[in-house]
Image (tube, rainbow, N blue to C red; front, side, top):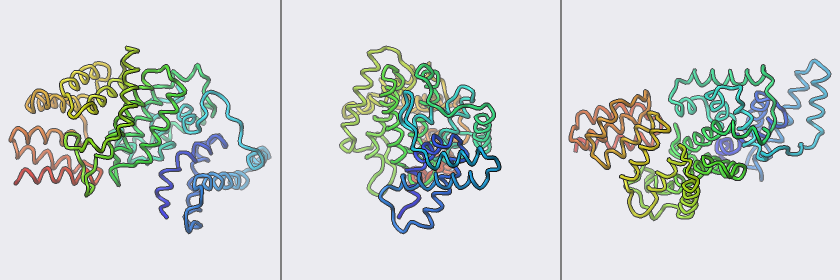
Length: 394
């Protein structure tokens, strides 16, 4: 029995359901954690539906806690109501508990960073260190954002309800960010195995739900296409011994052609609308990577030039430098990295090391690889970088 896998797969769903039932984030989280503690004691093997077992147990634990801690008649009444009522009928345009909780947490009263951090904690079940690495900021900063977001929800009386249809577009940006970061954490985890397929699958499922809810939003379609085209390459990302395989070296016959076809169709839909946004452009870049037997790097570079205009971030600049190296050579690409500032991000020194090695500057490349290895949080990536560094000495 792998309770850790159940926790990772079911935590977000269970918390979302309990938040809807209880209307209290902290109580929902505590109840779900209590239920998993009970499961650790009682489960000799997995029940037929582990998620349902956790939700039922968490609900009962919440009722017990409300009764035990209540000092007012209203709290007892709330516990009795929770115990006897049937699950409430779904109301509003958002039917999925998790997607609804994302929209609820992305309330305009919360700062953008707080919305995303809180939702990644609740929905993806990510721990503070994982979210901190996704944001490239210190762990205490993320912890404070989550605490403040919960306090703001409580103090401002932000309701736990489904946003009205007219409110959805204003909350769309943070929702897209959450799904994007959720998928990224699954595709390249900050710790443990390189890939968390459950997290990737859940991000794609929620992106599909969002696309069904808002089919006329090009950036929603762009995000879904981006996730599908990235997921399509996942079967070729690891070699037989679990080693990391970079895109140019992947066996393209292992790629999921069904997902590629779906992703390309979505990209074409976006192009017809002619309202390019960051997710659409990133999807187009991935469409080029998955088109034919080799990547057209000139086209990729042109798309990165366009992406840098609408999303001028250090990550985009770093990725653009990779395309520059393929089109114009590592010297120009290395120069492009001079202005990129990404403290603590291992892929910056790793990319610099690759460019230096290609220029024959092995001593500098080795130092850059050492820096990247020290920063990498995932063992698979550390092993890959270690092999690359060792190759400099052969």
